[in-house]
Amino acid sequence: MKTNLCGTHFLLIWLIAALFISGCGPVISQEVRKEADQTIGFEELLANPDAYRGRTVLLGGVIAGSVNKKDGTLLERVTCKRI
Image (cartoon, rainbow, N blue to C red; front, top):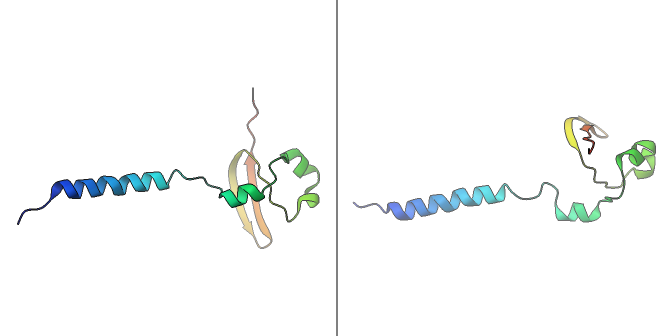
């Protein structure tokens, strides 16, 4: 019985490539990015959080931690200042 190694290798390469390509997609969906107000800065949000309650905002930075609560999620965010 002869096996087709070329076909097996070809299929394996395509499966690995598909895995890598699927991992390169955006973290935030296009729908959410379109819905989000990207003009709001963190300082504005912090100064008047009630004005933005129920709205979707998009902020930059690094999320250092998160805590799930019954009424939302508490995020610990690190901001890197530009030099």
